[in-house]
Image 1: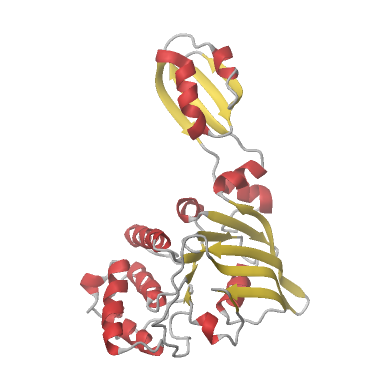
Image 2 (image 1 turned 45 degrees about the vertical axis):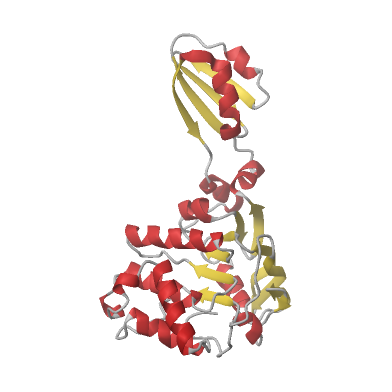
Length: 326
């Protein structure tokens, strides 16, 4: 599960997961603390090679949901399957197939990065040769190979975050949980973390990702679940979520002379066309798909094109009435 909380479970015979295999299945998860219902009927799935973003304001139920999935908090009801098997707080099989990277750093500052990873690898039950190989591999993944021998106390905050992720990857988990992995890091480390996550998804790892940065979700996540007051308010790709609230893309053309706006309005992709001196503004459902037809219909008088696609921030505000960082 990551970072020193797993029992020693040898993982030398891992299953090979292919794109589309459902690695995580959550069905109707519920958890209450006294009269407070923190999670109320949460359901979603994550497939191999998919990055799923769980977004919600503070107090929405994200941490409780993640804690149940990681197997550190018992659920009141519902079902969790990890890699095809039922999973709960007593499931060593399921925990051994989760890489859990919490917000809090779980590192020994007086040890080097390599020594930290060797320690955690031994907790996973890896043999000496496997430890040596795998530690070198994950250090490369997170871009710390050249600093592997330095004490962690000399690392920047961003480097420590990257090492935290490396520890969660040691045992090649099919499911990686990243709980706000870029909080408080420098821009260089942040970009390195995002590139590492994208690469992991490309290798078939299922990633559950939470963040308070909307641009990270837009960049990384194949699908997004918006959670608030313990329930999933909406789920889907960025475009599917935008469509839920009726947002349209906007194409602005800078033009020489007059453009036959009526010809543009005849295009099935165009919902509305407005013209002013030197400019034409079009509202369309999918700007990237519509743009070639728009340019063909506009002719040779187009000097510049600007495309604006509505972002997730407006969708999030519509669904929750709050900003992501509230």
